Length: 342
Image 1 (cartoon, rainbow, N blue to C red):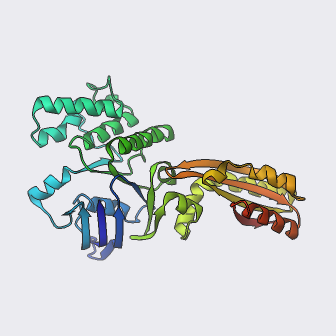
Image 2 (image 1 turned 45 degrees about the vertical axis):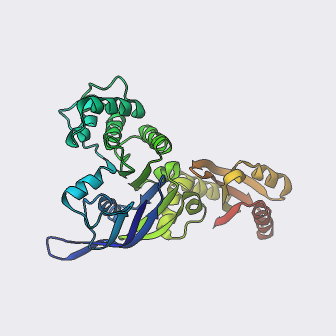
Image 3 (image 1 turned 60 degrees about the vertical axis):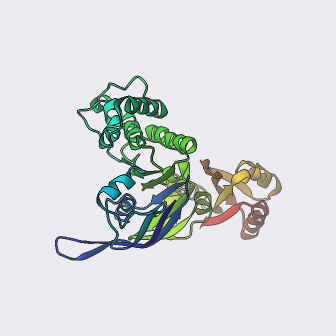
């Protein structure tokens, strides 16, 4: 569906210096896939997604949507190609003088769709995004989540094959973020829509994406299935993103407090994937082990391709007892990492 081949984008700043925002990136995204691009500010992800609909033109390389090379076409042909590519934004970009219905209808007006057909399509979209009863409200009368639902409906007006999401949940609170992400998953399944989203939040990737690309300094440094990336991150930046969910700040504080209290033993991080996340491995360890086992913190997260669980344990015992516990866990397909030694 989408092919990005050896794409580089170079900007010139006010001092005429060259800034390489995207550096030789190649990616392939399949039809019907939810594909995430994650990176910190300045990583190049916004520039990359803007090249997918022709808002930016690559300095080098090719961008293909289906059989159309977006990076080469201009004018009327580009405008027609954009009918196949919807886009939603962080700050909604709604027309404040238009109602919900009128905002959603706007792309159809531009393309000359007859009024009766236009209104029928708008009603379908209002139902799809759950805005029944708010058709005549203005953006100022809507919550942030409702505004984004209008943006999603508007982006879908022309029945696009691809939906681009530019930090679409960054301006929303956590509960509203989850409702918008659930809506995107629902739309993906109902319409078999290809979704490409950029974010700096690993929670967004974990919750809805099938695959993810990690960007740093304009380059894609890691790409893979979300579950594989959670299980075995390869680069330092990916490890930091995964740690946002698996070892948040409160976990570090709990570990430090526990070691200060006991001043002995080991802290280990366990990782579980798929069905293994739901097995009573720790209780089996406690029954079979001669060392003391204390649970610090743990959680199970759901990804589009299965469960991913993390658990932090304090194990009181000597090195031989620790090694025996590690071998017990590894035999049950549990990932084990010793992260501190008292």
